[in-house]
Length: 127
Image (cartoon, rainbow, N blue to C red; front, side):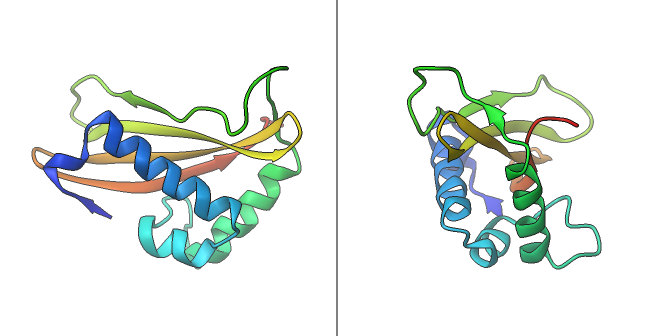
């Protein structure tokens, strides 16, 4: 999805993360794929790829610290200036069980004023 120059601040990016996380929690893979795309879809239909990758991540979720509130906080991290076009990553922990979550990551990339946001990955604990 193309972003406006006014949508690259932390508040706006956090709101996009909340939207994407809500779509994933509702298992609305079609709207998530339509709205944000999926960088790791490869040759798979994006909605189907999101579903398969989410279910795979759910099979080995990340442990959430005891006493952590759910849903865990979304974080926005900006990259240092670079030649790859990477601008920011939005990390969205998605609760999947008591004290367990998967990580939904969105990436913001682009040149100058033209930026795009895309679902980058859905992951659990590395095997």
